[in-house]
Length: 190
Figure 1: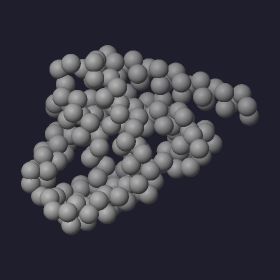
Figure 2 (figure 1 turned 60 degrees about the vertical axis):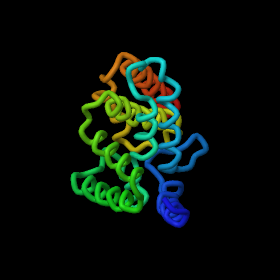
Figure 3 (figure 1 turned 60 degrees about the horizontal axis):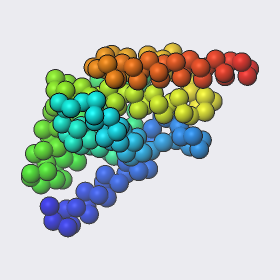
Figure 4 (figure 1 turned 90 degrees about the vertical axis):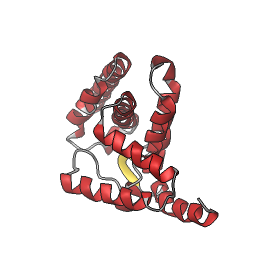
């Protein structure tokens, strides 16, 4: 990759720092896509000892690149995302990947294919953590930032992907309890 190609790519992908997600931070502002990806990428590093047979470096890469398309499309919350939105985001991802040269382009394309197939241990761990990081973010945010459907959605989002392993199942259970406690406190304050 030439220096000019790197600069051009960073200019496009840098939009992830300003494109916001539905989640709010503890400082009462919307979270950026880049902030989500950064914290998500830390998660597999922190729990690597629970997954000795998983290529954690590959999982970290998946975490860092998984929302590339949102640099062009912006974020659409999963509970509002349609098949049409998915197709648009996939085309945006392909457009961004075309900016890269091999071998990086080849590697990232293979990672996206692997995430889409959801067959490898790495893809399954990535997806579970991706869903669970969103739940962590919602549990941290002030409940006034929640829309009505999140009172139920936050308690079930990621349940299927969390079945991947004992660790992620337990993490989801704890997050569910935290969410229930948050809702209980909010209803007490009403």
